[in-house]
Image 1 (spheres, rainbow, N blue to C red):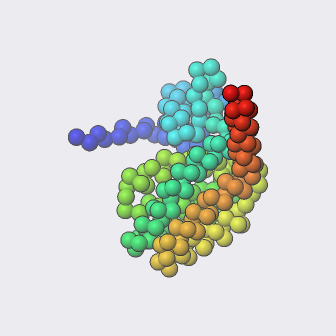
Image 2 (image 1 turned 60 degrees about the horizontal axis):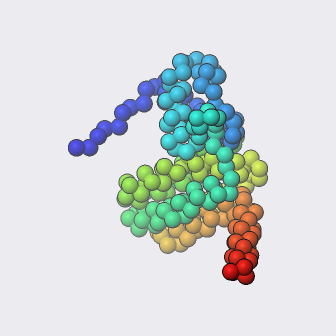
Image 3 (image 1 turned 90 degrees about the vertical axis):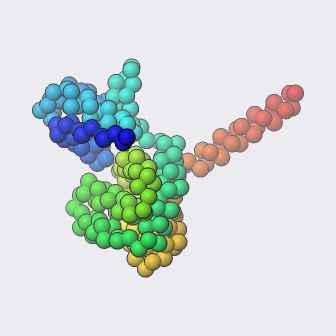
Length: 233
């Protein structure tokens, strides 16, 4: 027997969406403390919906709950970014490939790009970009695959928000989005998937340029340690 998800009360949903919006637009920054009493006062609600909203956000990976530090906005570093984007690299291009091969409508993706182009602020543009990517993978024909990508969607948006705050790259990404959609609409499933893979992969490389050099330094240090241990043996 399949269980039915418990609906989230309206006040909790309102608080949840508002905290998420503030995190993903940079109003609440990584590492910032989220105090229940302060948030409850801001939103004009009791602490209960705030507490439930924070629990939900912890489940999506946007906030971290600690016995000692309380609740904070999740920190973003190269390791976290690579973990999230690695999942996207593995799943999202394949989902798009399947959507194109089954002839799924991509009108929602086209509409999202139009909204992104017409956006007047960062928050609006960010939301439209998120909707664009989701519109590419949702019609893949595999609901489980779509849900798996939905699960990392907020964390990916947090990585993007941090990266855009440091170095806005909207124009380049907009061009890449247009090319991905062009290939998909032309029925080129493999070409669209390759373009999407390159788009996702290059974003982390641009946003965290030292990540690869740090990995190389770690590997070199481990190699030196292993050689020294061998010499002592």
